[in-house]
Image 1 (cartoon, rainbow, N blue to C red):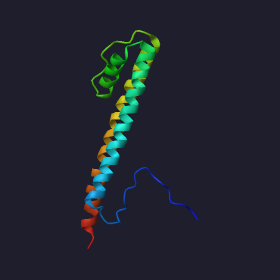
Image 2: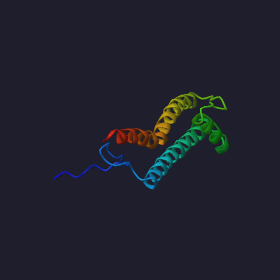
Image 3: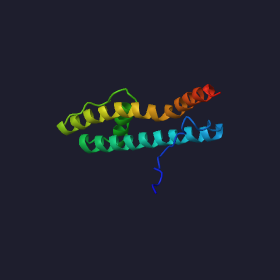
Image 4: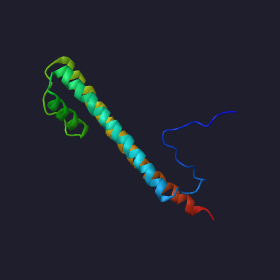
Length: 123
């Protein structure tokens, strides 16, 4: 006998009824919380990297990390080779993280919209 796989967030199948509004809002909150956790962890990694490789103060490391996560770009120019390598890799990671977090936040809304369209098709 196989056990059903547990997933972090389970979306209902199109044959299942539409979730009640309260359960949908709970799902939106879970996705939002997951997005915030990913952003905070990424901000921490960026701060540690800038502090360790470029010897920036914690507040300057926070500023550079937050600016990259926000899509604005770094404030200070890295001077060491390891700092430049970290900054480049962290910038690439931040670009992908923005796409990932956007998908996580929009997934419940897009799923509900598509699910509602399928529900309305039933006779």
